[in-house]
Length: 155
Image (cartoon, rainbow, N blue to C red; front, side, top):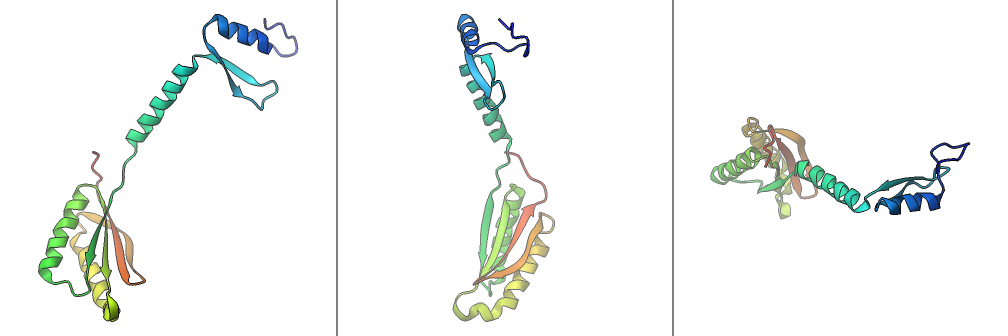
């Protein structure tokens, strides 16, 4: 076993399989493209279990980003604005991002300046809770902004 003079530590496939069988373990090919191929004697089921466990831990550590949407009209009155503002504050405090947008229906697109004023007002009112990630931008019939929380709560 391992009597190969030019490559010490190299054994034949038959010897490796016999050794793995004697230890009640599995012979696993680690690097098939190497010359000679590299194999390892391990408990394959245990190896798979540990890999799965590592993946699960990584998944648990990732932060899930939630985006909440709030819709305004170009002529949203103060009561509705304040109601939606309180919701946006709650969403930001809970650690969610807030996408606020003004939807222009029909010919109301001519009031795009009013929509931008409304969104800038929202940005100013929420500056204590979150920071602006995307400036007001008109995309088709929607003008939208994206706010992210200043501190992210872990659940």
